[in-house]
Image (cartoon, rainbow, N blue to C red; front, side, top):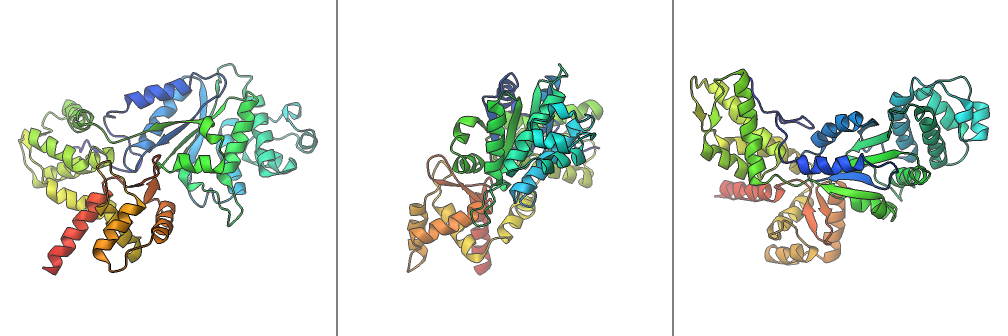
Length: 407
């Protein structure tokens, strides 16, 4: 019996529940003839950003857009030059069959130096080297030249540069490297010239504030699509529909008991990755136990939830220092009904546990470090939230387990 559930980073579930509204909003971006708005797709880990980004790619291609991009990382976006290499490598997949026409190079000096090459990566890099000036100057010439070679094809509407984990491309005053500012400057410039090249950036909730901090005009350059957890109806569809689809191939596929479905919705918090994880483990348990002929199945949800703690949360918890763990434990105590917290709330919680409460400046400094680690983010209301879904509940379970050990 094949397991119908697929947890994993970026793995598309058998049934994509609760994301039609976001997809419809993305389709509006694809109707632009002149790029006035770029797209940011943001949300906590586990809400399905990568899955949705991969779902949008064929939709864009069907509508005449060329699509390139990749997943960014700290190493790939650590400097302006590395960001340029990333852009050229991705662009070259679209232009590699184009023979460079010197008359379409939008720079006289570069046109005189680069002749008889294809616009594959080596050709683009040769052009990059031939253009004098800053990295941004070079990229503007390359993107404009690339579009002048692609645009004669009437079926091409434009080019989308799509990057996942975009929050890893952080500017650094310390290193004097500004990869975020670079892509903002370059794309703002070429879009103002009417070149239809659009950015689609996916990342954690701190992404948009990072962009605005890098360049204030980013606030007008992007529209933000925020993914949240699924509501109860969509969560139930994410559980039930894959089973219904599996039954078409194997009628013996069991249903979850209605009470089990409700429990999975509750334990998962409506987060798509958690739904897939819990359901897959439940089905694996069913298969291994060999419950032949059962039409309905009550899964060992509590045991699976403990496995989720080990597989998903514990690795992140183990990378934190003891002071950082202590601070996040205080933050979990200070969580409001809207799942956010403040420095004042942490300070108040610390007064209950320490003779000398933490100072506001110390709390702010530690939170800044945790933001860089992708553990927390500052929301639009100036408060902080966990970047990892249901992390406060995980911390509460850790405290409970420690208490049991002491007893």
